[in-house]
Image (cartoon, rainbow, N blue to C red):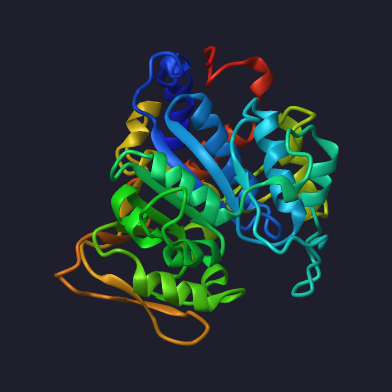
Length: 359
């Protein structure tokens, strides 16, 4: 029996108990998402995963920071969170804010979606200018967190993380940004780089200097897990959203707008990264599933090999808390795609968490 057929049987049964999550907490994983929502649309898929697992009680979504300057990024995040009934999630927008909308001047294939989502779905955030800065959000969230508890999920450029690492003690905390991260962060999960070597958009396209700074100055005591270009790039999701999604689904519209030509299929870089950032390697059992991701290495660290932030893995047995991800043995691309599509087609109006009432 194919693995995704087994999932079809198991998932509705195994997720049934998750409806109790907000009243009978299972120690949800605290997370902060740092997104470049603006260009590629898989950030919307990642926010679906995060909001649904938040409503299921497996994630504690403490905030979303945007690392692109368009005002529509923060507004689109607000629309997606509001769609899931999570309008209270704090959002931070990078300054200076612009009125820019996306234009694909690389391939001339893809179209803008962020401003359209922001202006065609309800949102609690009225103006991006009213949000805190990413540094303020990071420092507030980290200061309030338990020691070694937070997972930071980076699905974009590392601009905000560089700024946080450089931040000084202030009225939010007497600790510097480096000290806050070292004290409060459990793991940094990064969609970036290619493994064991290569070049990738998030690392090198917009702000390679920030990539270099973060990789060089990240606290050595805090684990880093990388989700590389080759992992999500080989796994396509979003199939048949027009057939099985709720008609008012923002992900359906966003994928249609961005992909174009009647398609809603895209690589799955950011959703897979977010899934790991919440569930880790062993949390899939909370969905009634066997492990779907694994570490591809046992030791070593990431290094940059050029000014455009191309990277290569350095094998070093002294470093054991840095890894890159692969699919677990026996898990196929289609199995992971099938699982992601269960998130993408979820209808929050049903007030269910894959089959039962959620919070």
